[in-house]
Length: 398
Image 1 (cartoon, helix red, strand yellow):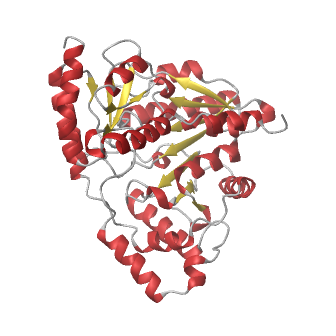
Image 2: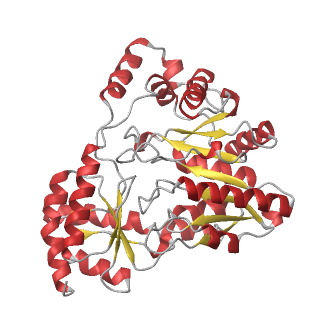
């Protein structure tokens, strides 16, 4: 066989999330979508803000096709990058430059580029992730030539465990990914945890004599409840790269638009930015979608209404805990992390599927015995699923 066996493996077996999503479409066609309680995919149900759609129409009516449909600069339109850097300055008091912003095709591209920019395969570089973690991190890290190392969380709360992290760091550690609010748990790491994490990294940088990069994966930053604070990592650690996506904050997952921001206080910030540009070039991620670059520039302060997410969270959390499920109450994102009612989360998933409930077993997320419920769906589906969740719990004697 002359093709790449590693790539064949990735293509022939989709992620568990995508497998369940495809099953949902098939099952919905068989019995009707209203009878399938699909909580698999983090696909926002809340519509984009009205100004986003209005801006798209206005741009199409008033701007040239070259601006909207032609190539931008490889790293993104200068004016758009300026708007984003000004927003970061205003919101987070970071003296950001447009020349340290790189427009990307969403968070996946941002992460892939950052990892490619900092990981050196010939040195055996490692990247640490905090469990539970988004399953594709493994693909991104290994594709960049690095080794994925998993740090176990604090039991019950699922906060990042800085003591466990310390046991995983070694002279080959090159990067650490922080995803808060977290997918799949919805947990927001506290400022105390972030400060302890950053202090540890500063100590280890001095000990090993090389930079360790903190890569902040932030697609859920705006999706937090009850005024929870999400620490902006550039304010705590100089060697930080921020990967941002508008997929969730503006409900635009299919448009694949986001950016990388390099901390201006970083060691060799301008050179790291050039490495980011080079990584984007090598991966084919140059010139993010031009139309949506312009949309973002004009809707930089827009946000989706997350009230329906909060209502869904409360409905599920309150009822499931009453039925006997053990759940981690999320402060952000739109996921509920639920302990399976038996040790094997895959067996639990199969029994839930018999009730037409589709949840994601989380062994591939680095924590066994849990499932993820994506509640970014309409309220009717949540209400319709509650009797099925109750019947499932009763099956287990709850």
